[in-house]
Length: 222
Ligand code: B1M
Image 1 (cartoon, rainbow, N blue to C red):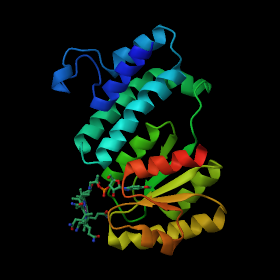
Image 2: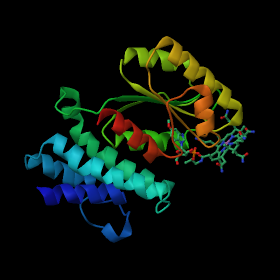
Image 3: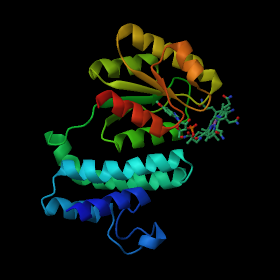
Image 4: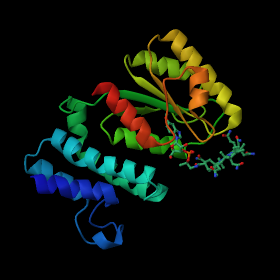
């Protein structure tokens, strides 16, 4: 059992989606996250064990390697694809509530900003760490964040901005979220943003990378 879970974690870490996938070349012809997850469930391994001991474990390694510049965006995307393929097998358990998520994370790129590559990486990494992610996409107005946060009490909110011209919208969103939902936790990130800006606008946490956001969120529920 442990060996099978370890194999799935390796597939996620190295982005091996299924047997037919040619990537990564040194795993060509081997079962991928798809087949191995099916096999694990057939053998009676619980969906929760697959999530905790294989998928999350694999994605944690991805997050750390990405932070340390040991892998780059394409590798992260392949890992996320492998993870999503495995998650398809777990869908019934998510729907029936057999698997408990760590919490809900609402994320979006702020109003006026269409950049979503970094936001998507953050979203994938947080999902891969056991959170339910509600991704609102790009150009998200403050009202939309507020609506979703009110609909999901206790959720944490993440804002991304890539333009200096949309940092003002990030500030506005944080201000309105904090006014309307006292105690709400808001994380921010994106290339022009830093910790001084976070302090100025009253957000709770700034992370320069997805892994920092994952670690902060996990600490909140530890
Ligand atoms: Co735009 N763009 N762009 N662009 N674009 C930049 C950001 C720019 C720096 C390019 C430049 O001039 N050198 C510049 C901004 C300058 C500034 O504001 N000072 C710029 C500009 C000006 C523009 C337009 C205005 C250009 C124009 O039309 N005249 C326009 C704006 C459109 C709009 O948003 N309204 C525009 C458009 C576009 C494209 C649509 C063509 C495309 C976006 C495609 C897409 O996202 N789907 C695009 C791209 C690709 C870029 C560059 C080249 C790359 C951005 C990127 O994806 N980086 C960028 C220049 C550059 O960075 N070299 C540029 C990779 C990504 C993984 O990094 O998003 O930083 P990043 O995310 C990181 C971290 O920041 C962090 O984690 C991620 C992974 O490490 N992170 C978080 C991000 N969000 C987080 C949230 C968190 C935590 C961490 O917690 C919640």
